[in-house]
Length: 398
Image (cartoon, rainbow, N blue to C red; front, side):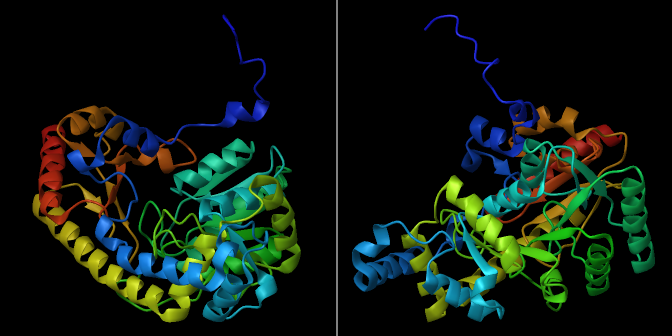
């Protein structure tokens, strides 16, 4: 067919779609050929390749042809039992998903109508913003202010203002542990504040926790789900603790909420792959998952410490950064005179990739901020990349 125009056929929802700048970077360059601080990739050495190979053989020996069959939409009973034991919840509060990203999407799909309000931190996870916008939600970002009283007041004022204007707030999306992109972690008091606001003002909390088990220092803080299990949908993922090629995650929540997600998932992909679920359960039951998590904690802690030391060594005056207690990212704030979007092509041409901070914001601001990932880049190239980036910043600070 010639001169075919598809624009009249697309749904109105597609006008709200936007491309991930991170994925666009991956299309343009070979990440192994540059100093990439852009993606949230685990490095190759984080994957337990040999152990996965053995686990696959064991799983096929145990389950046979069932490994290749359709599975229950709510997840394989074996995996749900293992997750219930690990996280201390009833099995009817567990829904297995095909990745945590799908978890974000199905939660949004069952809760949000066009024009409904979603609250989130500012900055927040880019993949979540993509999902929220695709359902034509109104996303309101709230900055993370210091001090529990100020934190509560900021959120409360935002909520009251939106409700007085007649807006319907459906849920609050938050990454409380080692947030992507900032690396920040909510205190226990801040988690209590959000749980209480959810109860008082009648919205759900989507607690996204892909990095929760990757803590390098300090004490674990109770999840928001543990504080208010009937007000929270808690999202977990095997991507950062096993392998992202296993598109496998889970949701903890009230059975009434999970039932809607169960029906929704039927129309998306029926079920998560059984082979992956069985391998994940094998890793959990044999202790291999905890061993892999501990190995990666040691690996990422060293990489984080190396990057923090290199930033201290090379960065010009006026540049500040977060010091995450876990996770895969830290957040740079530059002098306001520097625009990271204008800097980007020069940086990429010099062999360095990062993600501009404005992409993570709900208000389009933050042009003097950037996200750096420390997990993927080889350690021997980290100083090269930080040195190049620092030199480019120094030129603009003069």
